[in-house]
Image 1 (spheres, helix red, strand yellow):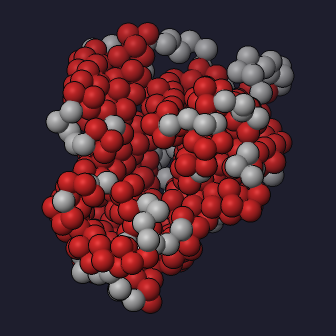
Image 2 (cartoon, one colour):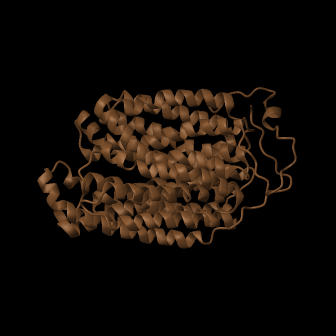
Image 3 (tube, one colour):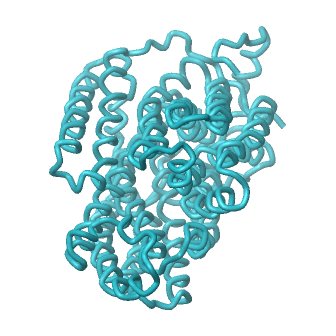
Length: 519
C-alpha cells in the first residue's frame, strides 16, 4: 500500500505494453471490453466510498453532538475538517500520480481512507473523531482525481464518455443515497457503522485494485514545487472554509467569512502568478490554453455552482417545510437518481460520438425546466408532481455533468492527464462550495423576509409542533420558491457558457494507442 513499494524488474516491459492493433478510424465506435469494465468497477468502488461518506456523516451530526456531549459548532468540524482535508490534498494528487504511479497512489489513498474510517468509528471524544476525519479526508481527496486519471488513460478518447458515465453514477447518487443510508444506520444500527461500513468496501477495493489495475511507470524525475504547494493548498482550504462559514455567520459580510475568503483568494492569486512562470508547476495552468479544456472547465464551475446549490435546497424543503425525516427526504429524492441512471449511459455513448456542445446545453435545459417547476413549490405540493419534477432534474443532470468532464478530458493526452484531472476536481469542489454557500445565504435571507429574523435559519424549524409547522409552512415554502428562482438564474449563466463548448470531439493523434489492460 505504501508509495515506496518496490517494483519487479520485469514490470517496465509490462507497464509500457500497448495494443498492437493500429488506431481505429475516428468514426468507428470502440467497444467497452471486459478488462475496461473491471477497471471501471474498481474505480467506482473507491468513488462510492468517498462520495457517500460526506452525506452519510452529515445526517449523523446531531447524533454525534449528543454522543460526545459537545456543541453543534464543535461537532460540525467532523464535516468541516474532512472538507478542508480534501481541499488541501487534491492539488497534490496530480503530481503524486506522476511521481509514484496512479496504481500505488490509488491504493494508498483508499488505505488512508479506510484507516481513517476505522479510527473514526472507534472514536472516544469529539477531538478524536475530528482528527480521524481529517486523516480520512487526506485519503478521500485523492481517490476521485486519481480514479479519473486511471479511467481516462485506460479508456482513451473513443471510450471515455461511456466510462465517465459509469463513474458519474456515484457522483450523482451520493447526495440522494447518503441520507437514506445514514438515517438507517444512525436510527436502527449505530452511529459507528457510518464509518465501519467503509471497511469491507475498502478491503474489496484494495484487493481488486492490486489485481486488476494496470501498472504505470512512475516519473521519478518529477519535482515538487514547494512554493506552489504552500500557496494553493492553504489558499483553497481557506477559501472553502470561508464559504462553509457563511450560513452560521449570517452571510458574506462577517469577518469570520471575509478574512479567510480574502486570504484564500490572495494565496490562490499568488499561486496563479507563480505557476505560470514555473518550469514544473503543481497544477499546469497552461492546460487552459486548450480551448476545449478551458470552455469545459468554465462550464463545469458554473454547473457545479447552480446544480450543487440546488442539491442543498431539495432535502431542506422536505425536512423544513414538510416535516420529513432525513431518511424520508432521502427516499423522496430517489426519482432524481433514477433519472440520472437512465440518462447517463445514453449521454456517455453520445459523448463518445460527438462534442459536449451538442449534449450539455440540452441537459441544462432539462435541469432548468425542473428548477422552474420547483419555483412554484408550496406547502402542500403533490409528492407525485415533485417526483416527476425530480425525475426530469435527474435526466438533465445525466446529460450534463459527465459530458462536461468528458469534453475536458477528451482533449488531454499523455502525461498531462493527471494534472488535468486534478484541475477539474478542484474546480468542481470549488464550484460546489460556492453554490452551497450562495444559495444557503439566499435561502436564509428569504426565510427571514417571510417569517422575520427569528426564523432566519433552517435549524429554527427543528422540533416545532405540527400545528406551528402548519402555520409557518406556506411562507417557508414561498422562501424556497424564491431561492429556486436564484438557482434558475445561475443555471441560465451556465447554459450560456455551455453554448461555447465544441460541437465535435477532438481528433486523435495518428500515433496514439490505447493502453493495454490485464485480462
